[in-house]
Each structure stands twice: as C-alpha cells, then as structure tokens.
Length: 104
Image 1: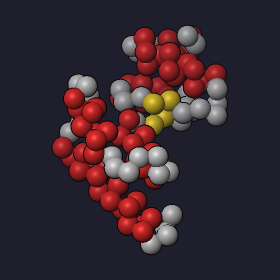
Image 2: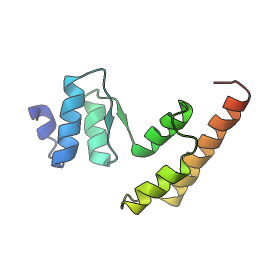
Image 3: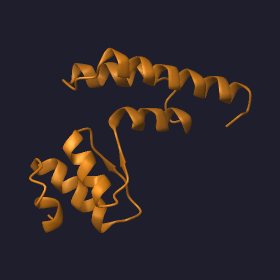
C-alpha cells in the first residue's frame, strides 16, 4: 500500500484500490466511498463509482440494461438512493436514444 494513500486512513480495500491506481496511471479506481473519492481526486487518480461503471458498460454495448445491475448491487447491500437510481436510469435512456439515432 502506498504511504500517501495510507495517510488518508481509509478502509483496507479502498486503500489497496487507490494504491494500485496510483501505481498504474492508465487505470481508474472504482470507489463509492466519499472519502476514497476525495483521496483519489487529491492524488490525481481517475475514479469512477459503481453506478458510473454500469453506465459505461451500457454505453459500450457490454450490457443491454443497467436495471439488473442496479438491483444486484442493492441486493448485495450497496445503498443507492432513489434519486441516484433515477439519475442512472435517465442517463441510460439517453444513451439508448442516442444509440438509436447513431449519435454516439
């Protein structure tokens, strides 16, 4: 674990993810924890939240819908506010519309 990341006193998993991303500048860190995102931003690490990862997968055509992923995350215990879920679904619909009109 990188000392500069350890100084933020994050959880072990968040610290490991951010340390790996810090060593590999071409990688993004997938973190949902607010403090971990702030640490990543302060250290110049590209971060993406889990919901953003679903949107990215939808945009790239890897998954046809984000709804099953959102439900799986909730079932696994990840708290997602209804506001965030609605935002993710709206963004997903916009991607679908843009794809149908070849506006990628």
